[in-house]
Image (tube, rainbow, N blue to C red; front, side, top):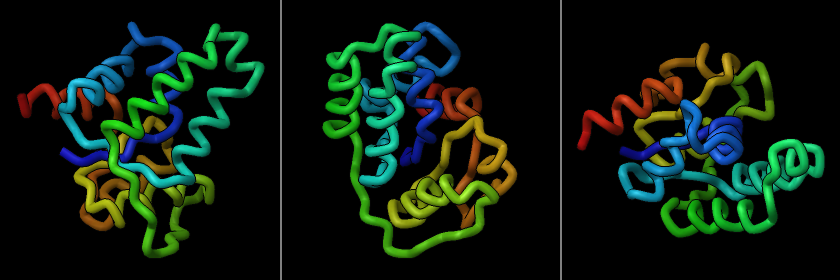
Amino acid sequence: MRAVIDTNILVRALIKPGGTVGPVIVSLRDEKFTLVYSREILEELADVLSRPRIAKKYDISERDIARVLRLILTRGEMVIPQQKIEVCRDPQDNKFLEAAVTGNVDVIVSGDNDLLVLHPFAGILIISPHEFLQRVESEE
């Protein structure tokens, strides 16, 4: 399965590995799906994780950030979006749609209603992390 994962899901998985979305990172590490991302998505993730307020509140070290970014670079597939998409009511979320269309993904995983209301988009499912993890498990 090929998936674009919203930044907020990756951040939540890192700050609370034992939480409900923590298994997303484990599934990526175990190569149960292919993470598709763009440079813009990766930059947003690095920016959010390195914010002093977040790092301090959740005790995220530079090593933790480097480890998750290395995992994405190793197990993921970077795409360069080929078309500009401007349909999301939050313009900052269009980057996930652009990467998904270019990367020919099966799903976009998000907890963000601005993306979820677009389900499906261009034949791509937009689903919750819970539903995604159920699909990953059922494909094993």
